[in-house]
Image 1 (tube, rainbow, N blue to C red):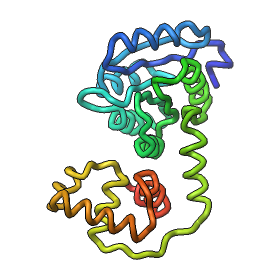
Image 2 (image 1 turned 60 degrees about the vertical axis):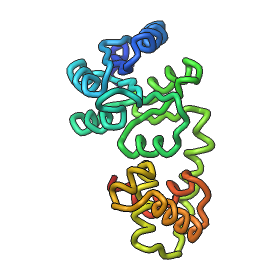
Image 3 (image 1 turned 90 degrees about the vertical axis):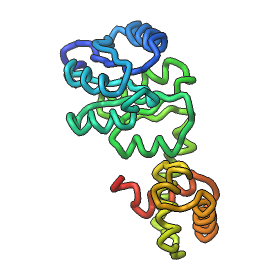
Image 4 (image 1 turned 45 degrees about the horizontal axis):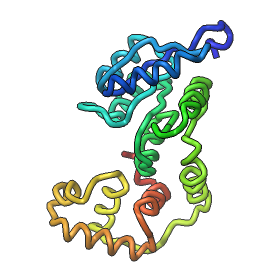
Length: 222
């Protein structure tokens, strides 16, 4: 709001480990009269430091970065500065990761393959205190989750303790090998527990598992 009142440009920090990508994003952003890139970073840790030092209005952050990834960096930045406005960028349509980012407090989610206007709209939206999800994902993902939460209907089928543990970890984004290691099980046993749980709950696919986890409140503590 202060930017609109004073006529100052939005201060943007760019975080991406590919220099050429950062240069391209900088050209797109600085072609706009109301935006300026004040700092750049090639990894998550530097992104957090630069964002705090530059007192950025919006941080444009790549999800896949070496060391501290985008999700971890977003959480660290928001812990240090709860009012930080973050727009994340990704090459992949990972709907489950989208939900994790939104729950972490990220304000925007844009696909790298989308038109530059998506990123610019996202920056302006989050700078004004809003939330922005790439238009190619909004109807398919967000509405589905709102509908699921609004229905208020929780499946009543009871899972075994192991089935619930496995399903929770699947919903949180762990790979089968990671789940097997964490629970001291074989990968085949993990697959079996997951299959049994999904059959009991009539869930088809990972997104359905995430929706169930949202209804159960499992992700609230993640």
